[in-house]
Length: 402
Image (tube, rainbow, N blue to C red; front, side, top):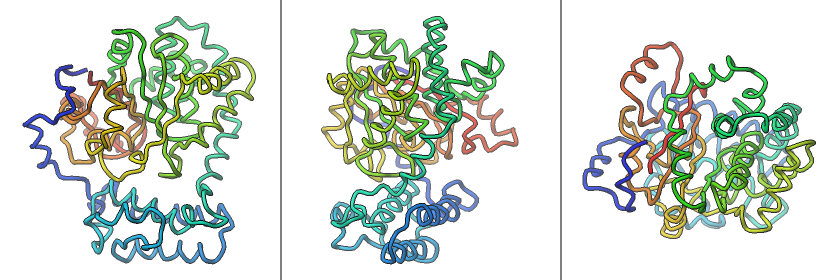
């Protein structure tokens, strides 16, 4: 946890040095970003094509998008595409996809994918989530039943262990569910905690306990099995009095394969409510909390913007400024929080988030190259290992700047 002195919403003078931190560009040979362009996005187009029986027009549009990202330059959205005007002033059109910033390119790819499928256009395919088959299959899986049944053993833990269990479950998502903590024993927990490259969890609880219960903003990441422990954590904050209300920030439309929308959240609430035991109690409380205004679902357009949070609009800035704590979940939100740049890993987290208007925490499993706030010795040890620790999803962090 770093100094609490800088949360004025203004970027300090020395933050001009950020301009020297080159943004991550798609085409860096051998990089994670290059692999996304060359492998992940083409594979996703094929997966979407197979999951839903789209008609010939949409299938041709998918073919055109595949050709564009693999062989061509970045092309504008069609002028008659709903919302195209919001993308007209970007400077990257006509450039190779490999030559533009990764954060922008990845976001624009998903926007073009939805355009190809007619997601926003009037007609029978309007509003259809192309990723719903994947999300629904994960949420309905038997593994989720095992995870939810672990909630029945949660009351047997001491309060501090309960706090830590639910925080780690939210952090690791479907890589380390509630069940791992409650049924794997001490060794299983130790293996997971060893993967924490930064652990400011005590600072997080201190922030939430330092003042009367207020509002907590929870910026969600993935849907399905990863959103469930986020919702359970929200319930825990409410029932323990750490939060008077929780604002759950969601995506206003399908984004990044599995990012959570309002529809995904409602599906998770139903999954909880229909489960046996303690999970149903949590689901019932959360449904009531939505009705009472204690759990607020928000889907700001900027949640799908191709920009870091230092460019957030005033109304979103005010929302975060009024929160006791904003919790940013997941890899993409981390990249947007600190800026998708080639930071030295030892750059203080507080330096990268100096612009943020209030206390902020990051719960993130590492799945891309960008990272800040690590101790020099930690970086040396990780770099000396054989594992691609920045992108493998085997390491995680809890960082707090208050």
